Image 1 (cartoon, one colour):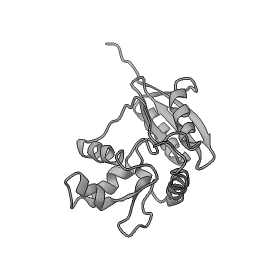
Image 2: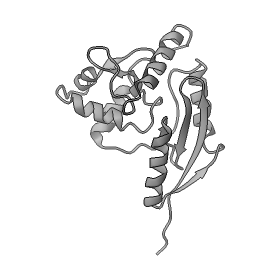
Image 3: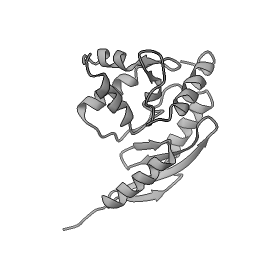
Length: 177
């Protein structure tokens, strides 16, 4: 029996707005974006436990890096990337709904719950948001509390959420949407 280990490629990308992010791709497409260094360390440990090989490769991640750079340079409001997304059907429905939130705008968790026909699933929406493996690409930063407050982004990193929202709002009139 041949045992093939999964190979994932990663690359670091420095952004002016939120600092360093880490792009992770499989042969199928974009797998993860880590915006917090501790999260990547945990991810690396999980890969070791699952016998997944992580290979640093700027070349393999260059398409994602290019589009993220365009986003942070105010030249892109949506992404056109191959995605290798895994999650429950519910989470995928939530993530699909997040993709509908226009650049520079926000929606509440309850807005998302209503949009997918699960009015009472506000906390589950929050959990789906928290487990989004590709922030920025799937714009979970655009989801805020019903009271318009920033809550629960990437754990407690609402400072990053605020930077992304302010960036988009300040660029909205200049970008070709």
